[in-house]
Image 1: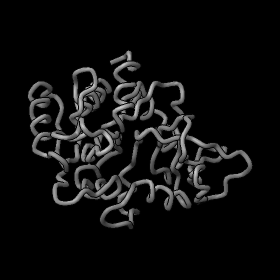
Image 2: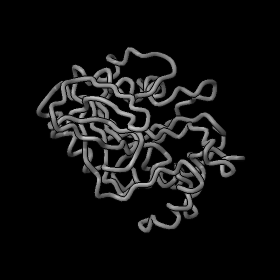
Image 3: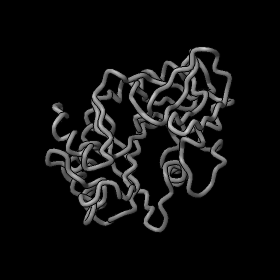
Length: 247
């Protein structure tokens, strides 16, 4: 299994921690978030990783070099977005040549959790064996949020909703029992998605997911019982320092 770490974000909401470093190198309990994510992947047996870089790219590459020296069994490639930050969808398209051989995990660098990556892989395997139109499995959970992904009774992505603004996008019939879940920033994607991604330039993978969910399977994997932190602000960073006992 391969993996992608989205580590190119500016981290503007984490200022002043990102005054002289990228979000990926902000430390939680003495270790950079990128280090936590790479260690999680190592523990899951993932040996091939692609990391995208943009802000303070040289510092991220130096960190990767040091990590690689200490963990020689892992092969870490860099996808360079110094010139233009491509967001999640555009970033994946740029990595296509590194990822088109097999399914791969995608993990946001600012997410710390107890979510089991091997369990996600096993769930995805069950889905893909049943249906060749299966493209991705999204780790989701029941959380309080303004924005939700919508899933039907079968666990298929069928839309998106912003409960604060009332905005909604429905992509397939959902029936009566629509399930609302928050996205954790962890998902598993099959390379068959690449020729179907007609979007270009800077775009979110979620835009592609919602469009493709009309005709293909994008499924949910419920991880509501797991600990999860999205380190998007100083407050969330302090909360993770206090509550993430497993680190």
